Amino acid sequence: MTAFGAILGLLIAIVLIIRKANPAYSLILGAVVGGVAGGLPLTETVKLMIDGVKDISPAIVRIITAGILAGVLIKTGAASKIAETIIEKLGEKRALIALAISTLILTSIGVFIDVAVITVAPIALAVGKRAGLSKMSILLAMVGGGKSGNIISPNPNTISAAENFGAPLSSVMWANIIPAFVGLVVTVIVANFLIEKGEKIVEAAEELKEENEPSLIGSIIGPIVTIVLLSLRPIAGINIDPLIALPVGGLAGIIVMGKFKKLRECMEYGLSKMSGVAILLIGTGTVSGIIKNSSLKDVILDLLKSASVSEQLIAPISGALMSAATASTTAGATIASATFSGAILMAGISAISGAAMTNAGATVLDHLPHGSFFHATGGATNVSLGERLRLIPYETIVGFSLATVSTLVSIFLNK
Image (tube, rainbow, N blue to C red; front, top):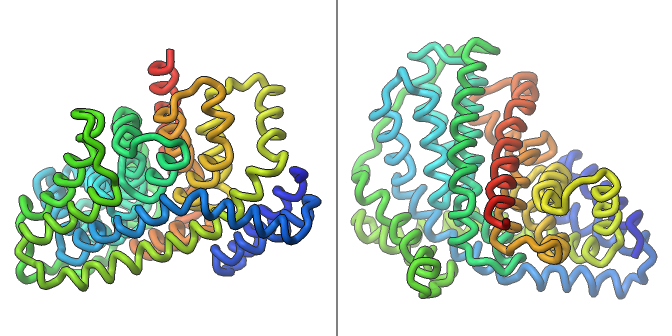
């Protein structure tokens, strides 16, 4: 089918998402229109859409089971405990560093980036008020830290990228360790630049301590168990699938914290979060099925070649383009990896490097206003729409640094 059809389908989906239509339905409708406009009969269009969903169904199953760990971290108070401890230990003078590290750690252990920001936001506002920080600076610190942690996490975006490239999840996570550290440094530098920019924090909710708050050791047991299990493959050649490692980590954490009675509540919360992502990925799969079978990827590859862009840049650029189209790290990483993984692998780039670069590229423009992340994070810190829009270039700087360093590391490793 023609590239025109795929582009038209994507544009329709983007316009509908901007107009607040359901993202999954918007993507499905865009896929239908794209296939038909691209010259395919309706029956063939539907077949390609279903094939696209089939291709990412293993990732969807793993993402749903990851909800157990995410639910345990949030509903037991473990995520809040980790964030509070970091901020308390580093102190108000290093508040921006503490906020960035807090969201980095939370996202890297399996908490969604928007949930991580919402979790840390009340503490951030209270600390920021006492330290005389602007709302833009604390929000950038949390968002940048979250982006940095997201590329080394067992979150849906990393799972999808690893799955589509056929790479071990743990290896894809480890491949972006250096970029994540650089992203953290860039975040702190840019956040400090914004301290005097925009509105200062004048009101903050009183910090309340939860009853029966878990200990720090108990809070980190779940993530540690998960990381150890996932690390067995590269270290000892023992393959523990994320489908097993993520829920086992969650169960281990809730047992050590002594909150097993809350397991049902944690599972329901985790499922509610992951089911939304799973449904989004179904819509994403339909679009990727159309794009993969269109000439759009060939057009993009030809444009890159005519611009003398190295084939090694296909991964981060495709991740950035698709994250801009969907305003979502998960959808961007999924569509880009599903569509361009073949071309990237044929260019001689390893599956691990390709997945890592695509995942990092998907953080460059995932914060655009037609996505839920833009609004959820702005609302969590009571930032006005104007200031939230002004923050976009600074968020892009952080995402660009992640993609750039990930690419440089991958080029070095592929030599």
